[in-house]
Image (spheres, rainbow, N blue to C red):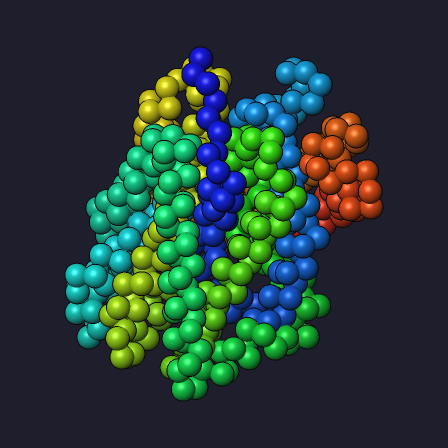
Length: 445
Ligand code: PFF
């Protein structure tokens, strides 16, 4: 058996975990979910859930991974390898492939827009309007699949190169660059005339939205999706962490990095949306229909468009890589596969599973699951059920199944009040809140 790799530096590890967390969720999903759920009120609830449930779970996942020094299945082994908790690990592997299957479709859209913005075709489409342009594109049969394959292929190449040479290197280059781009875009956006309304929308709470159950559900779902908790991604990255890295500090860095990124991309998007008098609740289309229209009308807009869609595609890539690593690490450890073979086979399975999502606005548009088309249904299942369910399992396992002393020492939180607060948040608050939200989603069907 080949020796298990480890991250080469602390900063490389933290950048990789932030790269996993920062993705389409922070830019494409955060902006439209916040727009639909009352802006600042949503943001406030989002922050509350990130701190009370997100942070404890991030620490829990990293703890399980580092303790196991193995894949997600090993992460759920408490006393011996025979317990049925192992199925929780296996579920995470399947879940990660499911997320990747539709996530790669949207990532493919971002890549198409990037290439279109860089080489001009995107800007030639203005006459017919971007609504028409976007809908024609996603309803074609071949094109969305080709862009999806390109994004999946790039992720496969990175993961095949290994934890250090692939994942760590790519994140080390891309993440600082993406931070520069998003700060630059936000700076440009907030200095536009008429942008103040957008800043107010993002930061001044509409208190009536705070009491609405669906705003709570949306905030919690977004926190899970954005941090990428529940599907053992952080567990798997944590398993390549050497003993010397400080665990709670890394968890804090992930939370701050991810939330900071979401807020700053909100500052890049909403002020511009308001400056052009557009309704902020235009839904998932915001990034692909509203924004190109805005770029077109701005001085230097073509460059801004290239920067924005590069940001979107690259952020998606670093998240896809982390999702792919979960089943790949399992195949390498359990089946004795080489990393290269594992990643190729899993990449192919993901593509096959993702085809229905890629075709869900064209060839397969008539297939409806409840109110949703296939891609939207996959996203709803993942955010409303799969991630919260994974979160419950992790909270219960660390809170109740691991020995208390072991959980406290492995997490480095220790026996003091900090460790106890963490443990009780995992034992009680996280499972109760998540179960409530799960049941609510199930009854609202
Ligand atoms: N956190 C990523 C994003 O915000 O786009 C997506 C994601 C990664 C979701 C990992 C779930 C996951 F397990």
